[in-house]
Image (cartoon, rainbow, N blue to C red; front, side, top):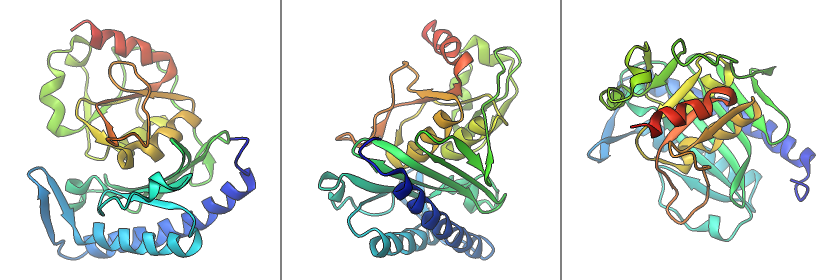
Length: 265
């Protein structure tokens, strides 16, 4: 971070937050009407809101940060991230199924990545009005109030959040059998809630992409949490595949405990 002016990152955060509020209003406008959606693959729906939010934010940042690259779930990679030291990484609607169903568990997730790690992360839930934010080395916030992960170390009495589509995969893990699991779709929102201390653990057994986690991982780490793959490996960004095989996001005190439980299978 010595190579990056912290005042400059602060200025980027301010303009990005304003843009995220506008993007959130776009999401609500679509959700309050009949949402049109289609499938880009067998299990991946996309809505008009995804496209509109991406278009708005891409144009906004092209105007305000013309030297930065752009990576988004909803547009083809123009390879600008290979040519730029910094690029914006966006998931316009993370938790698309929840969004389509009219549920509040969806967010807009935006990160500014320097080479291969996020230096600014923003996650906005326009339904709950939660704006999560973090700059590398400056802590994590929700609506301008500093947040911290929980200090719960008891795996037998913790709040765990997971996607409903992955519930069946939890049955082989003893420490998950008697837990009351909280289901929601958005991985970014799940990790943000761990950062806020509202839940203790967020787990995903399925693969994710950079845009799903870049903002969330910074927000979690700056709140005192730890995130890795389920094999304990650090999550790396801006790789050749842009893929992350699995996710374990917790407070630091329970992270190794969970990984050890998973390795026992």
